[in-house]
Amino acid sequence: NGFYISEEEKISDLFPKSKESTCKIHGVTVLHLHNKKYYFCKKCHQNIKKKLIKKNKERLVKEFGGQCKICGYNKCLRALSFHHKNQEEKKFPISGGGRCWQSLKEEAMKCILVCQNCHAEIHEGMHHRTI
Image (cartoon, rainbow, N blue to C red; front, side, top):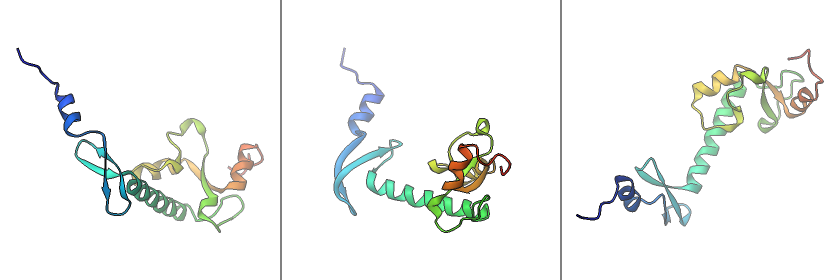
């Protein structure tokens, strides 16, 4: 009788979850295995994800009027956020990113676009009639 190794062990031996290697942009770094298919640089992946999150937010903000529904603020994209009108219907936070466009848009439909000041005031109970 021979010594047998499970399929999972074979895969993990052949393709470790991470390995040190060289990224064309970041030099020597740790690469991570994605879907047991290919390795990627974590730093590059994070940069791509940040750009996608920002692009999706710009698109959502534009589709929702581009300004705070309460006070009209529109100067800084980072100062605008989506407030869920009914917290019980909330599936995920819009700011989390990592979702497909259709999912983001469907979730945003449950929200109002507000600036950070008005968002804080909503949570303090100062804007019951506005939303």
